[in-house]
Length: 124
Image (tube, rainbow, N blue to C red; front, side, top):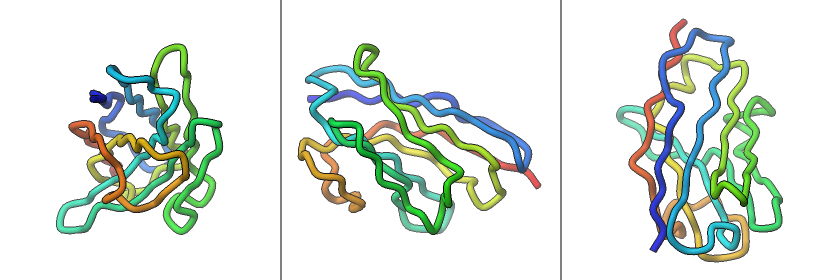
């Protein structure tokens, strides 16, 4: 079992930055693929990006276009989502997720564990 707790969300003006954190507890964090997803009101959950156990990252290029960066600190059991040049359309609840597999995946159905989410609101 893995427990995930996101933090770092909030209200920011367009063009600003936020860094989200996802603290993991339970099983060995470093062996999981860690993903970030987001869900805006009335929309489906959307893949943002993920990082594998080896540190390889994959992003939803159409949505983030080089503005977001995922990193992790295995010693702290924490994965981060650095978001720069934020836009109003980035407004959503952001979720952290863990996948017991070893291959990066964009499908939310594959992920085994989810955090409770953190709200990000970008004002224009």
